[in-house]
Image (tube, rainbow over all chains, first blue to last red; front, side, top):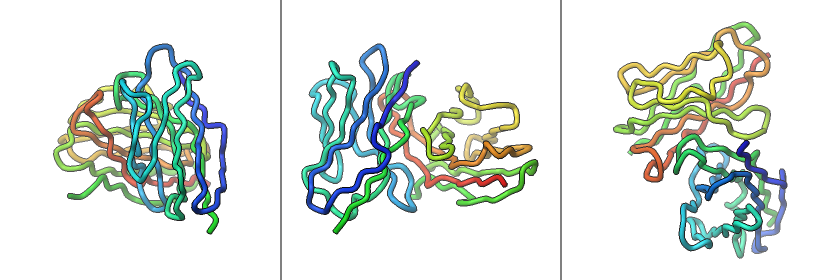
Length: 114
Length: 115
């Protein structure tokens, strides 16, 4: 069965430090991959997506993610974290084509220390 | 332009009671989705409407859950009777199209607590 694993439930980083959030998926074909963020009091917001092509994708708010087929991973990175990045981050896969019927991971909650 | 709105934002009910959650999608979005996150776990797909028709309801957990979208505008999700395991956050999302062009726009979610 298709699944998404986010191994880290909580991560704490210092402001200005680099960040990498891990995501592994289980899916037979080339997946459609997404990262969403939920800030306090807000809905899920799309950070970036991978459908095909260049395996390094850029998103909003200075985030990027790299698709590695050999590792079944789609890790999210940011070179320098800001206090406003404190939120919960969700990795998702779209097995039905694009955004249809997304399968989400359990989320990683990011805390940022000043 | 207004985003996806959901209410109530939080509902606390007793086991056996009924709760109705409402979602207003972005105007003009024919596609409406319900997802649920239980106990801090994964966010799981419940169902997908295209206008007023249920396109896919494979994620609905059981017949205590009833989703409607009369007139193809807002949608309601009724839980009757509610059980403890129904506690969680219910997200609604809408999109203009489906597939790779169908970016989802999510609401803030409705938190349901069943005591």
